[in-house]
Length: 257
Image (tube, rainbow, N blue to C red; front, side, top):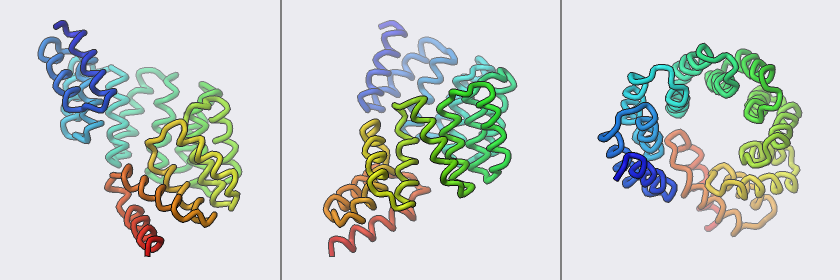
C-alpha cells in the first residue's frame, strides 16, 4: 500500500470518528515517509483524541523538517489556545505574521488570544488590522463581536455577528453568539431562531443546547429544556466547563424533582 493510500485511509477513519485507526494509519504513513504534512495529519488526530502532549511532539518534529510551515504553526497556536497558554499562542501567531503580514487568520487568531488574555484594547487593534487587510473576513467580524461582548457593547457585537453571518452564512458560531445576546435582552423568539440555525449548521456544539435549554425553560417547555440540558452535558467534556456542568446538572435535578 502506498503512502498516499495509507494517509487516505487515515483521513477516512478520522472522518468516521475512528481515531484509533486514524492514528495507526498516520503513524504508518510517517514510518514510510517523514514530512511536515504527515506530522501535521498525526498531530491533528492526536489533538482530536485529546492527546495534547503527543501532539506537541508531532508538531515539533514537523517544524524541525520545515520551520516555516504555516499549517503546523497555526495548529501549534490553536493548541496553545486550547490549553489556555495565551502568551505562547500570541507568539506563534506573530511568527506566522512575520512570515506573511497579509495572513488575516493569524491576525485574528492573535486577537482572540489577546482577548482571552484580557487585553481587549490590543485585541481590538489587532482585529481592526485584520479587517484593513480583508474587510470581508467573517472570522475577523466574529472575533470583533466577541471583543465587543467582553466590553459590554451588545449592540456593536450584534452588528459584527450579523456581518459575519452575511459574509459566511455557514458558520454556526455567530448564530449562537447572536442567540445568546438576544436571550440576554429577553428577545426569546430571535434567540431561539438563531440557536436553532446554529445547531442546524453544527449539531455538535454544546453551547447551543445550553442556550436552547434556557429558552425552553423560559417558555415552560420543561421536557424540552431537560432534553437540551442533557445533550449539553453529553457533549461538553472540557475541564474548564466543570462549574457550568455542575450548574446544569443541578437545574436538571430540580426540574425532575
